[in-house]
Length: 253
Image (cartoon, rainbow, N blue to C red; front, side, top):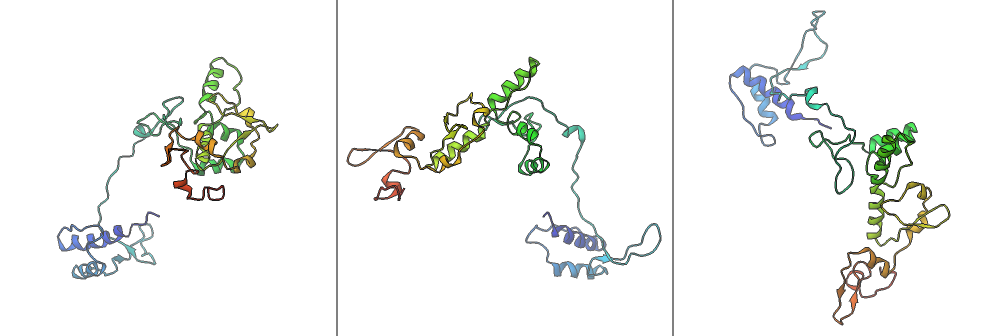
């Protein structure tokens, strides 16, 4: 990763150009070849390897191996702490994902990616991880309740259902999977805006394998329906004959 051979070639050619007294303008991928660089080094009376033996500044002895020496451009970047330091308690959220925005310019939050999640999982920091993935992220109801509890000096309640879980269910429904969230007593729980996580501590994944029927699929759609040549209404999505084929059977779907 990030191995830029062009920098080394530029160093060799820059050394030769300095000795010969000229400047070089060469495209990144269609520029001077390695053979031409060797030729220029030879013209300048320099070793064709672009390497020489350097002397140890402390002992005065030469190093065992030769080192690459040359001239190259280095772009200076201003990395200053004052420009980078950033903190956030509450702030703006994305309208689409309901998660905090990113970057200092938008007064965003710190990104907690996959690898960071794995790190906390490895340490067994379950409660910290739960907080980061719910009330500090896209648990809309939970973060309001948490803020209210802090203001009232009360115990912080259990987190709710993050918006990303609701999106997952919708995506699975778009694949014709009838997803039902069940409680410990196998009672179906309707995922609403105000739904709490306490009610969905145990989710029955078996129900997620059920293929939805035509009427349920129609309910997942936007309400638009096609009309066939015979004048009959055809529900959109997988059951439509133009999608599943002439044999509109459960197997074909």
